[in-house]
Amino acid sequence: MLQKLKLDWLTFVVVSVGYICSYTITSGLVMPLQKIFAPHLPIVFSVVFLPHGIRVLAVYFLGWRGLIYLLPSSYLMWATSVYGSSIDLTILSPVASLSVVYVAVRMVKTYSRSQNKGAFDFSWKECLVIAAIASVLNGVAHSMLYDNAVNWILIIGYSSGDMAGQIVLLFLMIALMRLNRKLSKFI
Image (cartoon, rainbow, N blue to C red; front, side, top):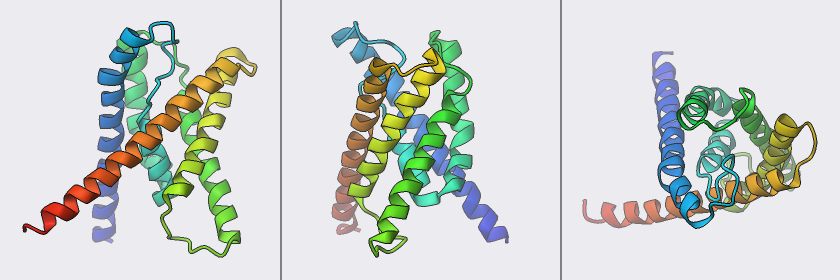
């Protein structure tokens, strides 16, 4: 029991740190560059939103527990965005973003199980499909939260930024795994 609790805390810390770091990189590096090179884009979405990839991977591997692990860091980063940068984000924004990822994961995993695939097989292609579905649903959810209607500009903005973030995160993971393999040969 104590070992399980220790593993849960470690998982919580890893997911939270990953989310906070990816959000910090997005708001501290991507957003300032976006303001310089694309000042006409609305501030409510990023052209490369790395936290979307963390959300997808956390829920992909941890299921509904990933939502619980992500919720505190999502609200922490939401609070810093809203109060720190004067960005108009609704309090339901983190819940909406997490919920649509869970729906997308359930949809894809249900379909992939019907294709006789193992429950614990990792597939980067599945992650990209999940990210694509979740990013469109995220755009729809946020357009409904902001405009009470479908706003195609928000949907396209959220979808493109979320997908770009997922792709960049997967490339970073691949690079880190290769680096780890090369470094492990020396140890």
